[in-house]
Image 1 (cartoon, helix red, strand yellow):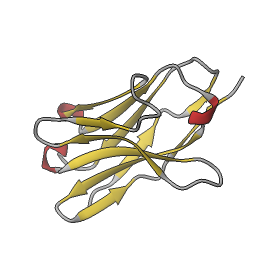
Image 2: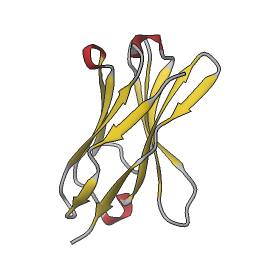
Image 3: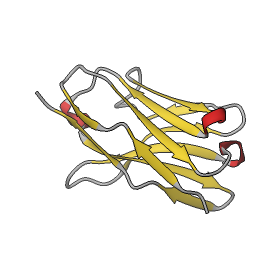
Amino acid sequence: QVHLVESGGGLVQPGGSLKLSCAASINIFRLTFMGWFRQAPGKERELVATIRGGGGSTNYADSVKGRFTATRDYAKNTVYLQMNSLKPEDTAVYYCNAGEEAVIYWGQGTQVTVSS
C-alpha cells in the first residue's frame, strides 16, 4: 500500500506560480512512475505530467508544456509540480498518482484556483 499526500494548492492570480508537492509513504525509487492529473468542475480527470522511474523522463500535456515542470526528490520521497504562468483554465483539483507494479495509487487532491 502506498499513501500519497499532496500539498501546495491555493488561490493565485493569473500569471502567478505555485509549487505542488506529493509525498509518498515509501521509497519512490520502487515506483514505476509518478504523475499529476487534474479535474476541473464538470470535466473528466486529465493527465498533466508524468515522471518515470529510473531515468526520470517526463511527459506533459500540451496545455501545460513550457509552463509546468515535474521533478522528484528521492531523499524526501516526494515529487513536485512547479506551475508557472498560471491561467484561469488551470483551475482544478490536482491529484498525484503513482504506479507500483500493476497497482495505481492516488492522493486525495489539492485545489488550485487561478483567479483575479
